[in-house]
Length: 158
Length: 336
Image 1 (cartoon, helix red, strand yellow):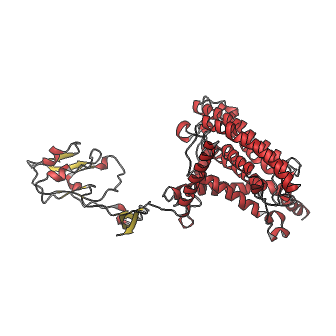
Image 2 (cartoon, rainbow over the protein chains, first blue to last red):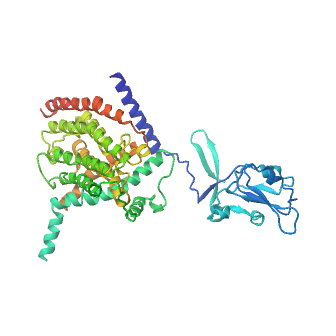
Image 3 (cartoon, rainbow over the protein chains, first blue to last red):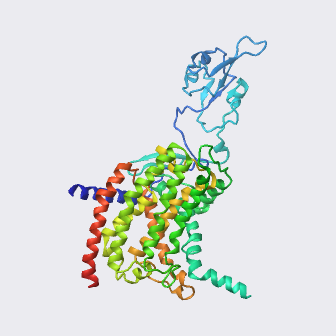
């Protein structure tokens, strides 16, 4: 009998907790296409290639653990330039780290979608293009994540 | 002219208006569309999310279910090779009919009952307890192991709640001295919830069990047996299966409001214009009860079948019996 009473009290408390959350909601969701979280320094998003800095040493292709980076050799040239296959890339950032010229950079863009699988294989020319976030292109507002002790995650306009 | 008047009179008569328009079929459809949205929205609020939003964004995505329904409508209705085809098609219709039938006994306002009968409460319960048979048939005729498991679970659950619900109503019937729902409202000096809280509690739990809402959505068991008896259904019939639980919940909520929340009291003055509109309070109360049941989804996880059965037989059945005795006591004290 005492057990039953205790369990009833437990149920009431559970419902009360639920009601408290219902009446004082603490939303943490970011309305993504309209708002975009500002990412921290050192975020490893899509990679950008700067061909003018590149010395074509091929270290990036050598170090790539996923075999995503590949050197493309043009006709008439002796050494190739890197292209990336995003089907394989694990965004570890080794290529950007090992590059002696800093010709590879990890950007903060991560929300690019490709229509076809073949589109994910970038040649050196495509790889050298600026990477743009489609959400930002359509006018998303950047927000900053702040950790608050009472409310958990709070998003403020950056 | 005579024909038009006759049609209008027929439509506005309690026998047609109450089951078909308010609080019956048409209202039930609106309730169905909004309550599923509300359920998702409430769960989202508690779980720190936003919930459905992009369909009619200005109103918080209230038309989401209409969009979903439209999608169901245009989906192909697949009849599996291995199913018992006749019953497979017939069973959902039967289930829906059983879920709609109770509205023939639920009065909308004083003097505005489709079927005024001294045993109206029993009529509601009887037609509601016919629905599980149709669900059993749905599962069985699907010829799918998950569907049969769901059907068997439905049968078990029916055993768990049926006696509890009937005994709770019996307790109230004893207290009011009648099973006529209209009379029951008149006899409530204070809401039945205060007169006999034990009966209200057991009826409420039985109602949640019957409608298959959390924590008793064992029949559907989304994560274990996919959708239970409805697993082979597609298109609009799947929508019917989904709406079935809510229809039952709506009928039960109306019954709960009549028996325990003093029905349509306070009667709105619009009653003199057209009677059922005065009974709008009944609808508001029933809707609030439904919202509370929907809210429970965000609090509870699912019970196991044996836990639910044990709760039904070991806790709620004795409680329901106790509520009958409590009713006898209250009847002597309050009604003399």
